[in-house]
Length: 258
Length: 277
Figure 1 (cartoon, rainbow over the protein chains, first blue to last red):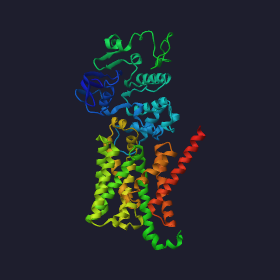
Figure 2: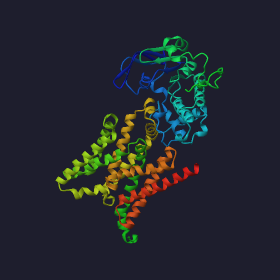
Figure 3: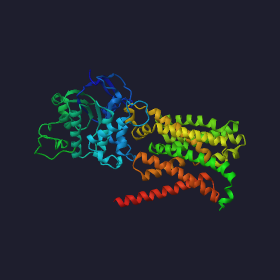
Figure 4: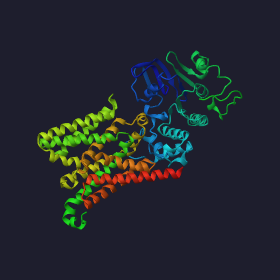
């Protein structure tokens, strides 16, 4: 059984039905990118996956040992209060709150877990720094560490690249790839950047207003929706966020703005 | 200006000043703890709204001859719950809901107490009268304050998580609604206790000032909480001392101390910022 199985989901935003009959699966070693234009229901889907919003129709099943509160969630930057006085350590630790018994304070094991994640993301030296004073890329690492504290199985990232400069974004991609490969954590990422999605993901879920697609990246590139979204640029050109990433670097054309 | 040795007879100290001091320190502690969460959740006005509701209820209780504290605490807790729900769901928006709700409660209270000719009796709740608290009031105050502080400490980590990022907290399976309610209930209890001391007019500033001052100085949540507590308690003690020396209302004196500390902290933060540039 897959981690998540969705059948015939109906997504509503306010009173508008934006998706009907959406079906997809997230497997244990999946790397799924969710793409689609604005207003197609990506954020609503994220909320449904996290249980922040009730389903408006269809079935969503969690399996293979995954419970809903074991998803490591990385929210959009805009959802976090930027003026909040909190140290990196405090933020990362707050990821350890799920699945805990009713003891009031963080245990040694939880503190060790938080320290381990900070080490993994190379932010140990920032532990006592104030979250709001960090750069955008550093903040994303902190939130990623927090998400990793909350999960050993599945990360869900909601537009993690928005507002990051290309270099930092490509760094985040390689961190994610490492987490996926080395720790065996499945990844679901909502993104605007279709080209990078195709390069990094195993599967694509495209949700559009009129047509949707779910399948492997290779199939997506061949599909009608995919071709229209990727344009003709896919073969020769690299997106800017794939720099320094072991790909062949394109010689022609300026890097496009992601 | 008073000569302190004239006022501070041993009898005055043990019967009136000491109990007031103990109750005041306990309530200042609670107020500053909750103030941090209220300011960060951007619902500072809930404290103010609840104090109006509390005042209205006290007036009605006085008019009907009921025990003021025992009636007021449950009513204000209920009001805190309703205000929270209103600001979550209502199309009015939280601040409008609070304004409507609290002024209505205030009006009902004043209506009732003026009908019963009790306006002078209830007016001391407007400005507080910590020195007039009975021994029973003080004990009640201290016990409830200890409860508030214990509950806050037990749920400290969760309160942080819920305040910092509600969606993430909810996604990891935390019962966010419960913790919001918990904060509201603790706030309600603190508001009623503080009303006896500071008066309905000033209690919300007792909650907000220390938190805002601490946020100017600190960058970690834990430090903010600790600093707020220290500021709150020392401002209370200084304010009490000031009011004894120059014979002024205690509530107002405490808030003025808070204002001075806030100004000093802002200056420090400003100078730090300049030096960093």
